[in-house]
Length: 627
Image (tube, rainbow, N blue to C red):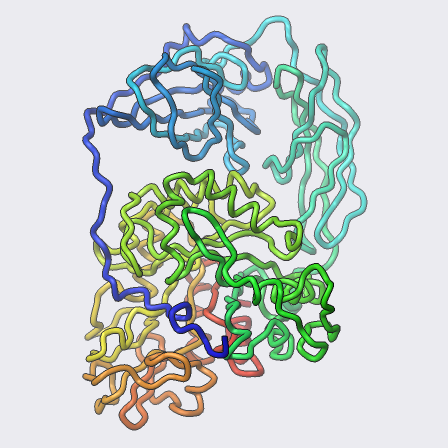
């Protein structure tokens, strides 16, 4: 393979339209069932009963052959719940199918739902819900919450564990700390301990020590512990110990600022582009980024699979091509980009790497993944955590183009599909890994953002990479010419809602926290030819010539061959000869980063490293602007 794969490189996200496919079902009615509390008798947890925690059930919809059910755990007391387990019985013929926001298992007609890693803590006065699709017509009975009755009643004759001793900290590093404590006591025996970091459970252990890893350097944390007895009752939370990791979070030190600066590294760039992991070092970019998305793994038959095995883990690097100057040998267990990323992380330990799956060309497997999210998540976990390269990756990114809408093909999985997939990934990967997604920036009325439950899915995500580029381009060969990555709307924009501000505003309005949104920057331009008008809005005859793809060219080329002649909606444009291009420059990136900061966004990301100059001037502009 000596040239770029133009199909896989293409990021044309808008040409297939918003898509109109929706999920439909007959809704027979909305029937709420608050279980009779007097009938819900079981073991109680006095520590948790003191919080008056209850569990209630509602049938949200019924379409004849099935229904949607929802359980809600409510904490009406003054002590936080650190985890929850609901048990109930369904009559024969009634069963749970797919579930979200909880792990649901069964033994015959007895069903058990446990919290996921991110939603176990329920603060006083707060509630947490999970849902499922079921079959049959029966109603639940015999409800138990954490082994106790669902009305928060107590259990006679079984006292909760005592408070463990105040923890102490040792072996504190930039990214980890060891926590130790003296044992709690219980009349029937202590089973294990929950370790809480800043009030949220991070682990359950059977010993009286725990080493917490994956921390941020120079950061303050607070640790407490609480014991569980053999009936799974929790005792009082211990006193806290304060821990500050070593190192510094001074934004002047590379990679340690609060804002995310993430770049995509493409596996196929090692071919025609001759762009390798070492280029991140020589360009100075490695010191200025926080995260890398490695693109792409494939999604086939509802499973995560390898994208390009040769580039990923087989290609041998010579000493001069290698990050650390050491050549690969024929018999070493891991080579290719994965080994180079491992070396990069050793040299720049602040960088975290996510494996991104899907993309424009490889999103065809997501609809099948949505049919069995748990199986999809398991396949992804098995691949990302393969012992050969598990240390390379810090999580997973999914690039589904697009859930319940049209991309290269059209998806009709329904509005909840992304949420279900995200929930399954979080449940499998746990809190110690990152789970993120690249998502549409179609902010038009009835557009792609409106087609899926992005707010619901965000509950399981660390952040979204909002693809605020490719709004316009020569996929409309006659024009009108328009900036492909407008920050705001402007008079004459070809499509309302196709700009960054509209997308971010819609996602916020839907309920996605601003801190979980990253602004997207393209390190390339999109252009037309046959254009006589310098200002945007001109007609064209087709796509302008590009090195690897017509209508697409790297910034590093355009800055010299077709320098910017104007700016509109926060993006530069250029008219040279009969060609018309739009792209971002260091100046427009600086203004976009200022806007991202003003919106409270979590940071920014870019597609992709090889489009930048040899000295990384666009990455530098992003780093300076974010910090």
